[in-house]
Image 1 (cartoon, rainbow, N blue to C red):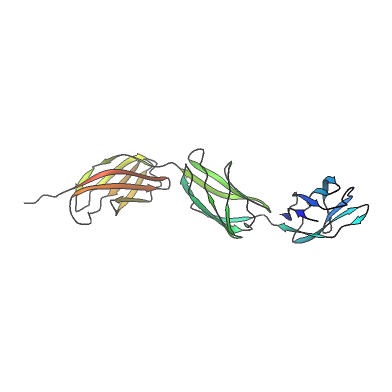
Image 2 (spheres, rainbow, N blue to C red; image 1 turned 90 degrees about the vertical axis):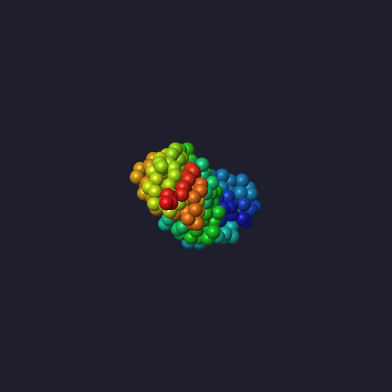
Length: 248
């Protein structure tokens, strides 16, 4: 006599189908000492709504012909999420987020706001999920649904990709030291600025402006360099030219 599913929330409310023979006219279904609500019954099946409970309990079906052999039903507590990483990403989605917590082994859905994603369960304490596209920039609540219920309490922030409108100035000596103002959009979450492969010191003065100190070229020679700004929402590039200093 199979039971499906054989696990559910400690709070009850799980729809459970018990199949077998001689089940017509079922008068009661017990989950341990508690009685389930029968919502459907045929000679080969009984559909019930599980009562609340905990641990592992025997499930039996009683008909006018007697009481069946027991089957095991496993109560699962609601998941607890401790953190997610990273906490922000591009509005287009597609990046992978790791969620840590407990009770995650039966996770079936992760909601980012109203959008549903299917997780990959690593173990009871961790899952990964590909972030779905957002409806726009800004924070959304994140909830995980498992066999034990749904838990909320985490936030993920969608961030639009940055743009660079201008560099001022757009050239400077190969020895570095030029203070460059980068103007554009969505620059407030800037994580790094590089000139070619060389990191540059920077300050985000607003969401539309960065103050950047151009580093020296690796070989001390003049030439073009690609300036790359990396934010939580992606990257943007612009051109900068290193020039030779005076020589007399």
